[in-house]
Length: 227
Length: 336
Image (cartoon, rainbow over all chains, first blue to last red):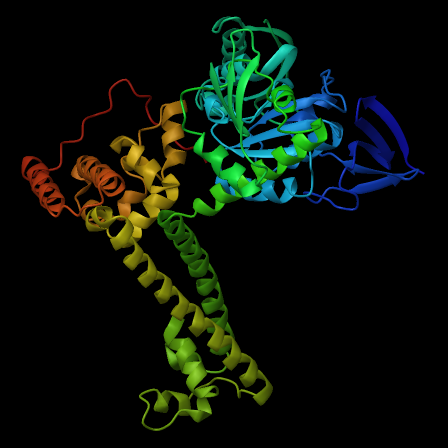
């Protein structure tokens, strides 16, 4: 019989042969990207591969993920929806505003969103929050994984517009998309500094760790917006 | 203060009270199209931290949070679908065709080789390969069926190849038919790309030729992106490995990427290749911009390019004398 340990709201560790990160499946019987389904005492869990998800890696790196079942999340850089599906599991009574710019990825995301009522897909440029400000309500968490050179600026613009007071920002910074040639450690230092100082009112960094061994040259950042 | 939202226009007082609201009907399609029309709007944006849901409930657009989210879900989904279906522009079709062509080339070559090896056991002297061999097998099957009118008749009579059993013959013929149809498909795609390039990017086609032009669009991601690239980027598209090696370490910069397949570049003598590549890239970038922004064909572009190339060549008739490398490390002798 597999064993289940609760890590935080909606996030579990299922132990079957080995420890696996998992969320309660909102879309019963269906998988999204070939992950495993494990049923324990009548509850269906969907395993979560930290190597395919920055958020998954952050959880295993002991980031304190501020999500509850009724949280509202603005997810920038939703891609095909691998991680979005798990966020949708966690905020089962909340909402995920999933912003993605590439039409090809949006195609997959639409497939996912049509089966999960709490995902609201938005095809738009995360760098231009004005273009979706008529759709998005104030949110508790912004998760950003956009692989753009100006990620700090994008985060600040969205936080100003949409983040609630005391809301959090979770950021995955890819060193290679900021400067391909520079040393990742230097890039991370610069970016963290930028988050803290370059914008008004700026972020307070709560936690910053690299995502090794799950993702190379990536930094996970949990920050609070000083509003 | 007027505020645009996905469900209507609101007029609020400074304190945030709703004075007036013009709400849309709950027709999903209509709401989705309206939401799309607001994307580019720069006026009447909701202020920072504006609570859309609360206002929707207050103004009576939705009766409950559940209804609000349900409508929002349907509307965003519908809007995204409209955008995705509009995203398949003609240049995207060219990209699909180019990528299909690359896959097809790879498959055709490996299947052709397999056919060559396989049939070689039965008629090694044929001297045929590729499409000719495939057609030969489809036509005759076993070499015993080659008629006396065929120039290969004497070779087929005296071949050292093994006898082809009927069961193997059926198999090989079918296999050869598939290979033939792959070659056929390849021609079809090439024609498609030529025709579409003439419509989508006539200037790029003029300067680069249809295949190189299409490949450039494919590597850039779209004609729009290609038009936005500086010509120095176009010069080294497709040489990213060499470029990053250059940026990271002290490797020499690449002179050309995929544009190397351009006849003006690959026929140029080595000492002007970099200069020629630069000239070609600059005209390619101009061509892409004309194609994306105006779409009119400008034949003077190719003339200007040719004059420029001629100028480069007349100024650099002889290869430069090789300078002894100064400051560079002496080459290490290889030890055995």
